[in-house]
Length: 350
Image (cartoon, rainbow, N blue to C red):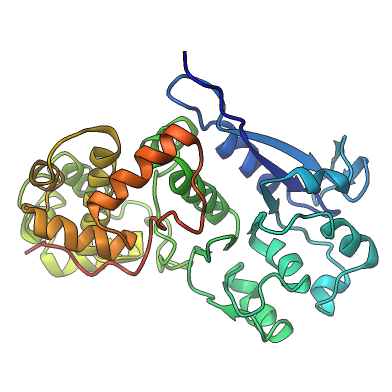
């Protein structure tokens, strides 16, 4: 019989003026993560600075049953965005009440912010000397207020091991999926994404602001080409073949692809191939040469090069790490490879 592992506890801190969408992201993403046997992998609870109603930026309040003492029980604390942070946003300092609440957090607890929730972590000193991001519209103000923080205004999210931050709104979904992927692997994260009907993976280094986030009416897109690629990742792919799927010139297709996705076709394909390789490494015992062929890298040497660049570890080490994590629960974030790693160079698209 399978031994029952205690679920990783995520505590979400609900502050006055919170955005309901961001508040719901951790519950939706972590709450859908299941062990293959069906048991929840996370326990998600919400607390406020005091039990009771918490005003949102909408025309309703939410009722929170737990006070800040719950933070002392957390394995991960998530701070969503709020529009009423007062001196935190205006002066970069915590109120006495908020400081007392954050004091409950145990050393070593993983800290996560969504959008302007990063102001809270920064005001508490948790981001000093660390990389961080927030909504692009707040990034300049954030950097002026917290000069000790290494603010990257362009990325979707940052991962510094035990402290992670995201840009606004949908980037919070990307960050939470990234955490699930880091804790439990690509297969679990992809199933969560499928059930949530969102893209399974957007790299943290992808730009926040894309020139054309949505295609203009009646303007051709590159969606069909991307779907065509996903069915042929194991085959040699040429840029001319992708462009042909959309009846575009290579130049037009490349420009349109970058405008819509934020990355080049080559970078996107390498990312999808790494994702395919991760699933094979996690779920099969295939030899490395076969993993390389099935994921489109061709040879074990090419597989090793791209996995090392993207994840910071070799394919063998990645497989070993996630086999151990599957047996014992979420791995220590200090020993687990970050699934994004360094920026991935353009892949073998000719």
